[in-house]
Length: 382
Ligand code: UD1
Ligand code: UDP
Image (cartoon, rainbow, N blue to C red; front, side, top):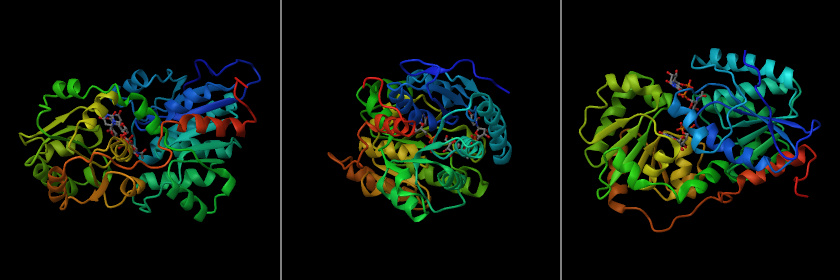
């Protein structure tokens, strides 16, 4: 099993500094962790960045470290893909060994992936405090593995760091102590706002063969509910081809569904371009200029809300209702998608749009302040 190569330091450095271990592993973890790690650098802590290896393709992992200024992981457990039990267990085995060796003062987990819940279960049983970034989101759909991961992680976390107001109510109803809940805003949006002005829409559009004088849509699809079952896939192909009948569509396709979509003839439409996953800045550059986005991603619902890009979420529910009430998002089904895209294309993009409270680019420092207070620290500048 992997061992830590080095410890990442906050400032100033001292042997007596508390050790904070950040757990990442899947694509959506990286843009959430980056602003927290950066902001925590202002405090006298030692930071250790763990990559579980849940995602491992260059475009699902390494590119984020390069583009987001994330430090190299100190530890990569290299667990790779597998069934839920096997993958979660492999992460737990690796982390148990690491935590026993390093005895962290705090473990920070992000989002709702298997790496998140695996780390939380190991930490709680070892008596190590846990901070959950993006706590309290609920789809109320237990068919989603992420919903199970959210429920379990929140139940055993000490610090519940919340991105939207609805999450506070969910946690309260589930009995979380009020003083464990901290409304800090959305670190994913910190990362977006940091890059927003420099995104090169024209350049990336040209590189994927788009003519930006014409409207285009971007799609991402990876949820088991859309891409795992061949019957769902067949319906999805029909729906997406009906979208492509109306507008050019570019799909940086997640590896999960690629084989099944290919077999179902997904790629056989002249107006639909399936490409490999894009790096973060390329992906958001493309989204920024899009007339519409079709997605089942969690993060993309949030990013489109802040960018004012109409978002059609191909799911029966969302754990991010704030992107509907305060954003550009709407839920669609496979049979309503073609009509919804027609409406969105006809309406065009709005000049102004609301943005959820505290999605302002400062969640990282707020989260760092909560973590530091828990550790009994003030900033290194005080
Ligand atoms: C995971 C998360 C999901 C999140 C998504 C973001 C869980 C349970 N699911 O889903 O919540 O929305 O990441 O992208 O944690 N694969 C590769 N290369 C990679 C990674 C995966 O080819 O670098 C393929 C493998 O065939 C693998 C499949 O994708 O079996 C699924 O990967 P996995 O990490 O198990 O789940 P995701 O569907 O990616
Ligand atoms: N993303 C990317 N390249 C892509 C697709 C997505 O960089 O080709 C980014 C995007 O910013 C998104 C994040 O990866 O918010 C995580 O997305 P994903 O859909 O994989 O995970 P989810 O948020 O659904 O858990």
